[in-house]
Image 1: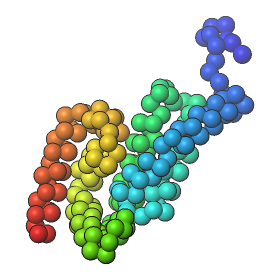
Image 2: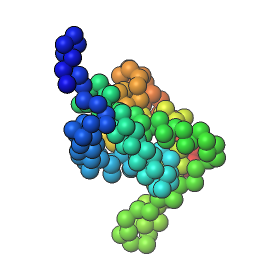
Image 3: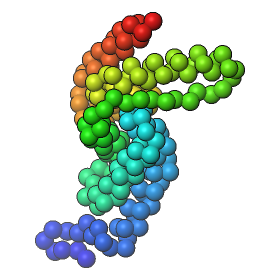
Image 4: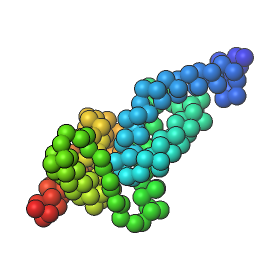
Length: 180
């Protein structure tokens, strides 16, 4: 109902129209991006169940905040940032090194062994990087995001993304060379 002094009022979070809009919008976003965000969380935390929980929590948070979201076109950026923040929290609480077990596609016994070993080494090296460097690499090369999208997700400047990614690639290369 309009207010004579302040113009139309925004929909109340509990109103049926607002709830329906939020449910529809968040559901559409979930259908389009949940798998990719789960993969992002999985690479960050290394545990599928935890990764799924992180993504569910991020979307639940988006739904709760939908009526107060200033720019709904940036909802994906909000959810991506929430996934990264929740991943950081899990890693801080875990405080134990991650043991990654990755299952590559099977071509032959020899190929499977070689690919499995290479991926294991890369994943172990990736998890030895500082969290911010790992995030930058995962978002850039796994998530295939632009520098601007990474900056928005990590809440840093584009220059910080460039330098962090460069340092991470160099550090990852050094770690992998040491293992040879």
